[in-house]
Image (tube, rainbow, N blue to C red):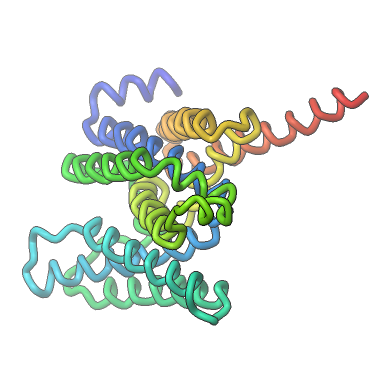
Length: 284
């Protein structure tokens, strides 16, 4: 199976693009995923993720109906995810509505708008399932450039404001006392999370994006208490899951996104169970 994958990698450009997409997404996944896990905002990231479909559907509709040939579905995904991040963040910070209710509303509206736009697009015959469950094998060279730009923005934002983000993740009140504008940086973190969601959507799709955002970071958390080392390990785990999932799925023709998630889930369970067993043995 591995030999077949390596042989296919040398022959097929689509497989090379899929490999690069997996590696590019792992950088953002490990970096922002660690913040998401530590801050415990995966439920907010879930709401953002499901709004991506609405943006993709709107972009495809405008491309077909208004003749905006330059408009790419990922452009719509970026706009929709950032809008959802700001709306959810502002509501959670300032509104009196229940946060879970607002997230559920944004989640449902984003998915519904996407379905409506896609079904209304004339001559649009692309399978909706490719957006829901990932289409990493159909990533183009243009997609890779856009993913690289998003990766650069995420790394730049995460690096420049690392201390501020770490402060609001571990001790929000202390950060506020130190003069950190907690609300502003919280919104910034949500926006970087939104961009990461767009990256991961191309790899595993809307439905499974939260698993890939959280599982590598959660696995890394079993091996270190340092946030920096956690990020580095999460990047490595994400890359291993992505490349391993591609290799395992290639031979039998399995869905690559689902295979990546199964591999990530197995890795997390092994780390959790192994740590638990070692902890019990150490107490004896």
